[in-house]
Amino acid sequence: MAQQSGQQVKRVTTKTVMAMKKEGNKIACLTAYDYVTAKLLDQAGVEIVLVGDSLAMVFQGEETTLPVTLEDMLYHAKAVVRGVRRALVIVDMPFMTYQGNPEEGFRNAGRIMKETGAGGVKVEGGERVAEMIRMTAQAGIPVMGHLGLTPQSIHSFGGYQPRGATKEEARRIIAEARVLEEAGVFSIVLEKIPATLAAKVTQSVSIPTIGIGAGIHTDGQILVVSDMLGLYEDFHPRFVRRYANLAEEIRSSVGKYVSDIKSKKFPSKDESYTSLVSRK
Ligand code: KIV
Image 1 (spheres, rainbow, N blue to C red):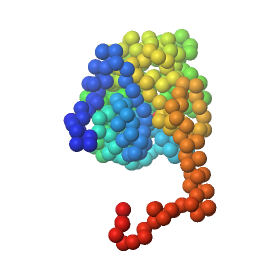
Image 2 (cartoon, helix red, strand yellow; image 1 turned 90 degrees about the vertical axis):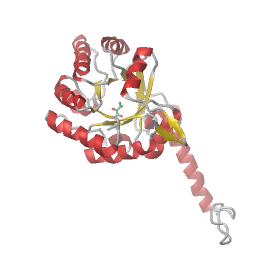
Image 3 (cartoon, protein in one colour; image 1 turned 180 degrees about the vertical axis):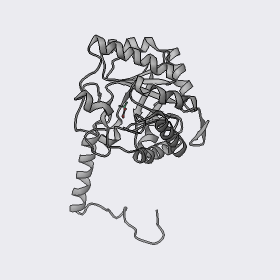
Image 4 (spheres, rainbow, N blue to C red; image 1 turned 90 degrees about the horizontal axis):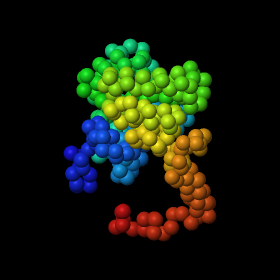
């Protein structure tokens, strides 16, 4: 239990989301990278807040997710954890902090858990990260998997095209989902794969699948918060539904602020201190 505005809140755990799959209740997930956004997402009812390494692109302005460091992730994850009372917070393990050898990945996952207070970590890949997942899950650290378009492998894929389009790759994704389940993940993100393949993966495993660009049949959905709020305008994949246009809101609000300053409409008398009594 956690406190939210004086009330007890039941925390979402890995058990909660695993039960949601069994009950047929869809799981709502979003990314967050800071305290204020995480708090709003939590209050709005998302079950999982992912501190995604997408922050490299939408927060730091990098071209790919590769440059983000473990120190960066620790910094953002701590801020997110402070904002969340109910949701399960999962932290992406950055590129080259777990692929090298299982022990190194295991130690870095431990750092994330100890230093941020998050509820678990996420890693990309199948067979090649299975041993690291096994060690980490056995130590009591919840691990989320990620298959399909795994952005940390963007240079070997050669671009952001959908994955799993050939029979052979589709078969491999289904097999890798089973490997991840056997290794101990509590859920799997499926990114940018055909909806029919995502449906097959979802039926093949007993843990929840969370889709992004993977159609309607996954157990839950995730989007990058800056995409769905219309804040990040650099590109707009077809799977992103924009629920707001915050970029335009910010531009026009800041434009008004600038013009109010130039025309001396801001600050007004009410926004100024006229005596020492009114200090608010
Ligand atoms: O880094 C990220 O934001 C992600 C999601 C898109 C699943 O991995």
